Length: 334
Length: 264
Image (spheres, chains in turn green, cyan):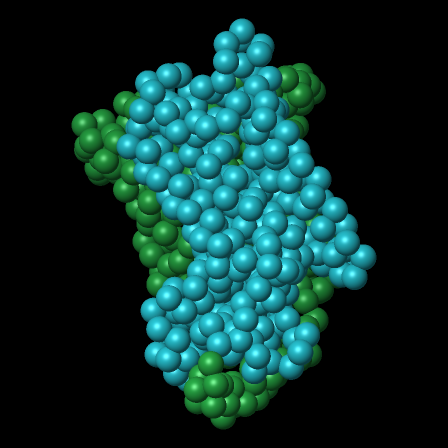
C-alpha cells in the first residue's frame, strides 16, 4: 500500500491539478442541441424500422407502391429494390434499421458527427428515391399535408444545415446559416416552403373533397382521441378543398419569404412555420401513423418543426461572433 | 407478424450482460460496507436487465408480472423522490442535468410496460407472454400507445445526451454520470482509490473523473496505478467507471425504446 502511495504521490498531485484546470462539461450550444434533436429522430426511425411489419413482405409492397406514377427511369430501380427486399426481408431490413441506429449514435458521438452527418445525407437521398419515390413530387400526388416533398429529404437538408463548420459564423443570423452562409440557407428555405405552397395548389389537392378524404383517411387504426380529431378536422374541411388549399398556400408562401424579412417579421414567419408544421403533423399525418403501428418514420411534420427552429433568428451569433467561434472550435476539437 | 426471434434473443442476451455488469458494479463498490454511491442505480439496472430479458424471451421469465409491477412502482417512487430532492437545488435543470432523472424515466417506462401489458392481457382473458422470442407466441400490444410514444422520445433523448456527454470535453465530471462511490473502496486497492484520494475531500467531480480516467488508463497516474495494482484492480476500476454505468444506461435505453415500439 505504501509503495503505491509513494509511487503515485507526484502523479496524483499532477492528476489533481490537471483535473482542476481541465474544462468541465458544458451544455451544448444551439447547433449541437439541434444536431442531437436530429439524432433523436434518427434513433426513432431506427427503432421504428425494427417493427415486426418491416420484416414481412408488406414492407416490400409498401416500397413498390412508391413507384406508381413515377417516370420509368425512377420507377424501375424502385421496383428492383422492392423485389430484392421481398426476397431478403429479414436480412435487408435488419441492415436498414442498423444503419439508421448507427447514424443516430454517430451524430450523438462527437468525434463521429461529421462522418455520421455525411452518411445520413447519402442514406437519406437513397431512401428518398428507393423508399419514398422522390416524395411523389413527379407524379402530381405530392401534398404538404401528406408529407411532401418526402420526409427523408428534410433529414438530408438538416444534415447540410447543421454541418459542424463555422465558415459563416460571424454573419450567421440563425443556426442554419453557420455552415452554408445566410444566403444559401435562405435560398434552401425559400425553395422548400415555396415548393410546399406550389404543391398545395395542385389540382389534386385543391379539389373540393381532397383534404377531407386525405385527413379522414388518416384516422384508420389510430387511437380513439386521434381518430376523433382527424374525423372532426376532416368534417370541417368537407367541400372546402379550394378555400383550404388557398389559405394553406398563402401561409406557406408567407413562411417561404419570411426569412428575408427583418428580424421581428422573420421570427413571426418561423413561428407560423412551426404552427403550420404542427397542424400538418397532427391532423394531416397523425404523428406519422406511429401510434397505429407500421410507420417507418414520424413523417415530415416533426422534421419541418426542427427545420424551422434552426432558422430562428438570434442576436447571439451576430453580436458575439467570438463566443460562437469558440463554441464552434470546441465542437470541432471534440 | 413477429419480430425475428434471433433479434429478441440477442437483445435478451445483451440485457442479461447489462444485469451482470450491474451486479459486478454492486460487488465491486460494496455498498454494504458504507458506500454512499450509486447502489440504487445499479440495483435498478440489475432488475431492469432481468425483467427485460424475461419480456423479450419467455423462457427467461423469472418473476410473476404482478411482482414486477410492484418492484418498478417502488423504483419509480424511489427515483421520483431522488429527483425531487435534486430539483430543490437545480430546479428545472434536473430534467437534462439531473443525475437520477434518466433512471426515473427508465423505471417509469418499465412500470408502464408491465402495467399496460397486464391490462391488455387481462382484457383479452389471457396471461402476459413475452414478445415472442423463442416462444412463437403472438406479440402483445400496449394500451395507451401515445404514452409509449412519449417514453420512446424521452428514452431516445437520454441516449443521445449520454453519448454527447461521454464524447464531449470533460466527460464524466460533475454529478451527472457518477457520484463518488468510493467510500467502500479503501486506499491501496488500486487505481480507483488512489485517483480518488488525489482529489480534494468532497470533490465529487474530481472523484468521478478520477474513476473514469484511471479506469481507461488515459491519465498517467491511472496508468501507473493500473500497472501496480494489477489486473483485478483495473477490472474493478473499469467496472466502477462512469463509462460503464453510462454504457449500461445507453444500451438499456435503446432496448427499451425498441421494446416499446414493437409493442405499439
